[in-house]
Image (tube, rainbow, N blue to C red):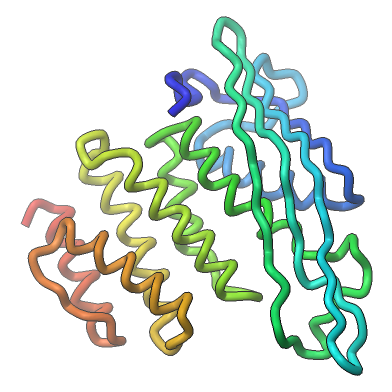
Length: 242
């Protein structure tokens, strides 16, 4: 972790320098929402500065009669946090959305600027934010778990897996009961979204979620629609010390 974990920052100037038109706004939307989860207000004149210097590469493939579609993306660059009397913290970001084998004709971005840069950015951003802010990033990680599964499930669930990995990196001893419970509620909600899928990404995510839940629960309720009620009931009891 950064050592100071964003301590003492309640507002920050956001700077996004991206080489693809429109990508800066997509990144700003993601970062601003994350900071507000951390109770950090974006500002034009704050002493702290969170800056991103990003390069985006649109990836394309030929999809038969549909034509050339920019259905993949790669984002690389740096996230740098500076604040008075604190050492600057920089993290390297590298994420990608691979090209899908098949698409619907209605899902063909014909302009490279419309490539999926946002999800390509979000996965490494989750890891970097958690690394810099430490356990203080838990509200954002919990919201990542609640995000609806849209688009490519491999990518969307990969972002959620990143949140689970970041949570594990904090160490159980550094978190209070309420912090743990707030994240586990999100994990259960995320599992609920995958119940009707046997795709590899969904199966892998449920396995990771089960391992995490069983670190706290002595009972494996399984993952069925009925079991979701059991998990939520168990968590309520665990949260209250029952």
